[in-house]
Image (cartoon, rainbow, N blue to C red; front, side, top):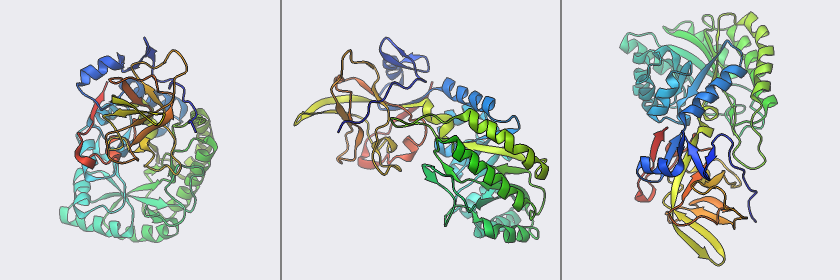
Length: 410
């Protein structure tokens, strides 16, 4: 069965039948990069998304970027001048963040299994450690004592609710993330006796959600939970990370998130929260929503092959660069990302269907399954849209020893 047809993503213009990225026609950009495959991220679209968020969200919301979505140093450097803070998930990402002008006190470190070395690194840098467990609390205290530095810490809470309709649920029920909400008061009581600088809470309930009402409901419950926990805090709550969860449309039939509705509802919730948390910095942390739609993965057709009536466009790219587009990164039923013949977007007539595959020795190496791309020829450029987040670094780049993809910010 043929997949539903995608329309050309509206964020990128098409000029002379070529996709234009960062003001450059795709063929010229490919020549500039020097080889395929490559990822291209459009800096103007990233900046425009930040402006869109600033306009829709309440003025006193601080916007943080989750580096794990796309840790390319040039992207992170660009965002350092646009957002209010960074969140990292490893010592490696912390180094990337510290290489930017972002003040260390506006960088936080989340994620389970932080090693003693990573904790020492974070404490020495003066960033905020989001404690994922009571083990991490003890380890942070020990590291701080050894360094002679008071660790700056927040408690990551595993709430007893989840983000409904989320593509990835990060809370509710047993989770490896955060400290269960019912345990947090006891942990806060212990923290009063420890040499720590308490910053606040991090409550993240889910990701990749396109329903404004679900995000607003989670934000309301998050604020209510934070206000209750603040009563047991060892000091006033200076920062509350509300998480994110804002999704982007990937597949046919999906509609963009109504960002205005999210902002309006959050504005309605804030007055009550401010009565309990008058001086708290309220943070929304986003990754995919900021960079996901600004990125494109580009590979080249090496061979146009017909097998028993089915057209295959065999390319020099594949799941080793873009695991998510192959359907092997969180999809239960495989669906096609938007995929285009980037140097000849329109075929001029109804194109026959074709499947885009890569060079790997596995049937899983599938970037597009029977989409209207049959007008492509050998040497043409295939573009996988919506590829700015969880692309190259979320893929098995060492698989079968093929060269990795280039990344450029244009």
